[in-house]
Image (cartoon, rainbow, N blue to C red; front, side, top):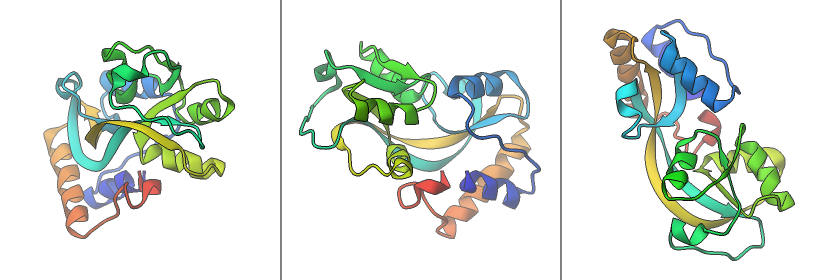
Length: 193
């Protein structure tokens, strides 16, 4: 959130930011409502024409995780058949594993999946890195087992299609300036995302 706040500040654009809404609601609001945006999200082929984009603001990897102490390793998503997988509803990670024929148990909040994994309600957590590390740190949970890395992608700020191009340009220029100055990244500072 700090990265996006700094972008708007440098671009001289007034904004209000609301955090912690269910992903699918924020996604739909951004699609339907001018002057709305969502972050951070991946620019998939399906999403590309639906929004205007600023970024990338961060980089992430899609991963399958198992509970601490597990030694499970997989080499493909197909090998995850038969495991109960928790995912974040409507996220790019959930969409990707569904496209591979898997049926995740979707949660409205990704951090719920950490507790489900630790309690044994799910076998695997499909999420993104470094996001899972942030949730684990908040809950005082040590390292989880990375079972599979199945995608790596940049993350963006997605803006409603009716956002003026001038606003998009100002935000992109502000982000580019921040990167030139070495402003923090999600990999080094997940709390900035």
